Length: 158
Image 1 (cartoon, rainbow, N blue to C red):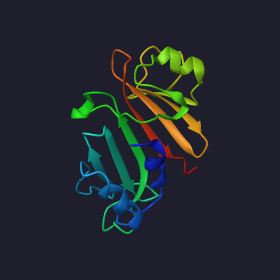
Image 2: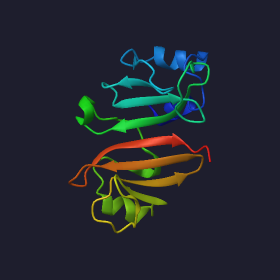
Image 3: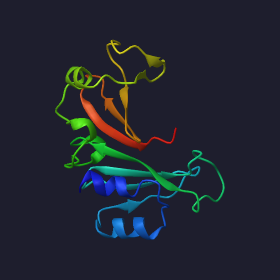
Image 4: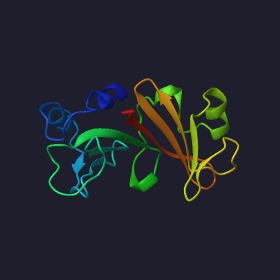
């Protein structure tokens, strides 16, 4: 699966013709039940999860008519029972990259530690780094030993 294919459904409703045709190409995608206005479409085989939710974020009540593709999670091998995503990753990133290599090549706009919030780029064990890349946000998420678990590519709705 090519990155361009994933990006082509960003901003489209979960039941739109474009998303329906896209998902029909890949029978490994499973549509999860919605929760608080968010809904995931998961392919462990392809190493990709898609997040659909309203532009204004999660909400209760009926929201199918508002749920658009906002993000793609691109997984490394074995993470959350996924195979590794084999397509291109924005900014030339790779699952084999070290954090040091990634931030040397592209300084993140934000570094984050769960439980502490935004931290300095030299923080020793961040949860993730994030970059603005055109109309996208790209984040690399690390495990406790600093290895990349997954990337999230999101529409930059700012």
